[in-house]
Length: 166
Image (cartoon, rainbow, N blue to C red):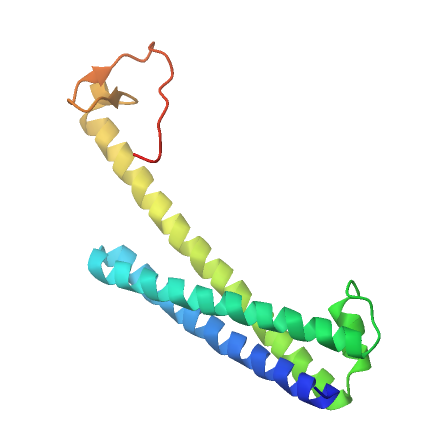
């Protein structure tokens, strides 16, 4: 495969990754709405959709990594050479396109990290608030562990082990 074709393929893969990341970002925004609304059925469907998008992103990532390795080989760079070093070997138009895409990808990933952190903070806040309310309503049950029959287990018992397979 020619260097120009590999450059175009890399740009194409980066564009696909960007589009998929933007779709994933939109999905996370919708996910947050369903968490806040406690719409569990739509939340589950959105999570399944996001899982499929994550799988596609992983596949594109592998393709991108392979293209980068091929381009490094083509330009006689070691596999450990930085992506920045590879960029200096590409033609100006490809460099420009890839730098712009790289910047957009970083921005999209940053937005995604913030959005996911926001969902986590919201869920943690809601859980904490609920725990505080339950502790006030039932102060005698605060910090207790209950068995399958609903009886409180004394705190001085041996540590319990859980088998997560069950």
